[in-house]
Structures are given as structure tokens and as C-alpha cells.
Image (cartoon, chains in turn blue, orange):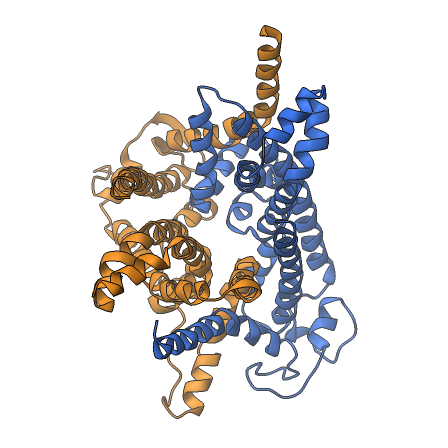
Length: 273
Length: 300
């Protein structure tokens, strides 16, 4: 490739990164703007929006903020945390077991399972959401945190399955055979040989499942009960009522959290490979 | 030996029982019930009556129950609009990501990992926050109008939010990573020696692109297009926030049927139409890629 076309491509790359990050950066800037009337016009630096989220005293009046009590917001954060923890742990166990079963055994229905596991990932969210809604209501389950966790597990297990399977495919089976030859039982072989080797995949899968669960809006939207609002649902509700600067601060805190989790996952993966 | 085979079979059963129970009872059964619902009569106050009723589909496709309701083409219009916008989103994400994938693939070592990390990171940012960012940019008092006005390009704020343009912009932004990753994977696999060989043999850059680079990266392009099209087609969050009541997509109609109108059978029928479209596309993809793979293997 010539130098000139290389330089054009570099300029394009910079523009691409700008497209990815500028919208997020905009929220960051606005979240510190002290202008209460027009958040687009920079007036000065303030932490009031962040303070108001946590219910600290600010110079803001009631009408300028959405969250009159931080209780509703904190409840949403708590619900999201419970759901994401439970759903990611359950789906990590289920997805890992499935990956082990399909990678280490040959049986007639193997292709059927492989195909079935792809479906929840490619299914449009809204279709899965309403199918679960009809099912849960029809079966008489009360909509709440439990139905959200079960609903999330349906598609998260597939993500964990894919990641752990990739790890298993790149793994040397000779070590497992050696372990068996040396008289280790299946459980000991799994715990001492297989598991340590697939651990980066399992941890990576769990972190991905955690992030996706934390972020899910559409499926949760249909299967959440009245008193099980999660954080994305809470934010969606706020946005439908209009934009107030407080949302910037909530958005930035959420972004920082998911970036830290994601960066940890990506770093772990690159380090252990 | 039989006990060994038996214990292996037992272990396989133990490993697959959880996923079988989960996907059987909470995936296949719900989808089956949804399919069933789409053929039932909507009850008066929500709920259903248990008799066969094909008119949920008829209402959309032009064969409604004659005495009760007239055919309203609005649903087919919304379905076609959803298809058209999803197609536009695929074309735009493709146009943005294809050169970007080549840009990233030119880095080496630590720097490549870092650039890839930068490109992947926004993928993990909350979806609702990324849509919100575009509300800030596109609304009448938003960032874009501010910039254009202060630059003297426009006198009055442009009405961009609540138009198809803003829905497409929002969808493109949130779906970029889905297009980037598959294309990047196929660009990485592209052997530079083949490009070199084509140039050495006197091909023009356009010929090299058309005959060597494009065919070899096509699997990534098709894969990316499919996984962008699917969420774009059924999306309801982006049109709800950036399209308002003016740019409704089929996802918004489904949401209305379930949470406001309480006509679940009709909503289920619309969802079945989305699902059917997606499954047809997937089937074409699997069949074509299967054949393409054989052809590529034969050539190699």
C-alpha cells in the first residue's frame, strides 16, 4: 500500500474512533456543567448532578431533577446487581457444563444442541421477551426478579457456551488422557486438569454474561414486575419523561462501571492467552 | 468396558440436563405458546378465547375478518418501513466498518491490541446510554443544531429528532460493533501474499479489490449484515426514544399490543412475522455459506 493511501486510512481510523467516542464524551462534559437552564451552554464546573443522585445537598431546586428520592434509583441499582449476579453465575454453570458435554462427547443429537444454542443469541430480543411474558403469565408465575433471572439465563447460557467452547477447542486433550491414564477419576481430572485450563474462558464468559445482563433492556422490559425495575428500565422511564441534566451523571457512573468490568475481562483474556 | 461407556453416558446426561431443562421449558415451550397464541381470538378485555382465528395475520397481510374490521394498510406499511430502515442501517454500518477493519488490521503487536481494545470498548457501554447520547446530539436544542447555528450554516434549528434519519443514526451507532467484529475477523484472515500476487500480476487496485479482497472478506460482510439486520429490524427502544410517535417500527406496534392495547394474539402474530423473516434469512445464510465454503475449498 502506498504511503498516501496509508495516510488516508489513518485519518479515516481517527474519524472512526471519534464517531465511537464523541457521543459518550459529550455526556461526560455535560455531566459537569453547572448551567441548570441549558445544559448545552457551558457555564462552569459542578459536581451537583452527581451529588443530587446520592441525595446530598445541592443548590438545585426540586423541579430540576428527576430523582426526588434516591430510594427508587438505589432500588433499581440493587435489582440490577442481584439479577446480573444470579443470572451470570447460573448461566456460567449451565453454559460451561454444556460446552464440556458437547466438546468431549459424540452423540446423535449433538448438531441439534449446537443449533439450538445459537438460536437465543440471534433471536430478536422483542420476540424472546414477549414469548417469555406469555409463558410466565400463562404458567401463573408472578413477574419479578426471579422471572428476570430465568429469562436472562435463557440467552446468557449460549454466550458462555460459545466462549468456553472456543477455549476447549484450543485445548490439548492429551493432558486429560494422561491424567486418566495415571489413575485420576473423572472428577479429579476435571478439577485439576480441565478446569484450570478453561478458567480464562469461564471467567471471560461470566464477565460477559454479567455485562449483558446488567445492560439488558428489552427482554427485562417485558418480564419485569411493577416492583422489580432494573437500572436500564429506570433510565428508560426517565428518558421518556424528558431530559434533565441529572441523567448525565447517572450515565457516566454506569459507563465507568461497565468499562471497568469489560476492561478487566479483556485484560485477563489477553494476559492468559 | 460397558461400565466405562455407561459412566460416560451418565456424565453426558448430567452435563446436558440443565441446558435441556432451561431451553426446553423456557425457550422452546414459550415460542410454541407464542405461535399458538397468534392463531387465537383476542378476548374483549385482554386475554384470549380458545378458538382458531387466522385474522391476526389477516389484519396485517390484507385479509381481515370482513364484518368486524376493515383492512388497514398501516401495519404492512410499518412492516415495510422496518425492513427498509433495517436495510439502510446494514448498508451504513457496512460502509463505516469495512475500511475501519482494514485500518485496525494494519497495526502490529501491542499497538494492534490497544486499537482493537479501543474499538471494542464502546460495545460494552450501556445501550440505553448510547441511545441517550444521540438524543442529546439530535434534539432541537441539541449539540448538532448548536454547532450548525454557531457556524452560521442554519438560522433555525433543524428538526432531526423524531425523523427516520435520527432512528437510523441511533441504530447505526449502537450496532457498529456487531458489524465491525465479523468483518475484522475475515480481514485478519486475508493473506497479504494474495493481494501482493494480484498486484505483481498486473491487476489494477480496483481489480485486486473486486477479484481478491472482496470475495475473501465476503463471509465477514454477510455475517455482519445478518447480525446487524436482526436487532435493527425488531428494535423498539431506538424508535421509541429517537423516532417518537412519528417513526413507529414493528417493534413499537408489538410493544403497544402487549402493554397498552392488550391484544396479545395480534402482538404474537406480528412477532411471528419478525421471527419468520429472521429464520428465512438465517436459512439462506446457512445454505449459501455452506455452499460457498465448499466452493472456496475446491478453489484452494
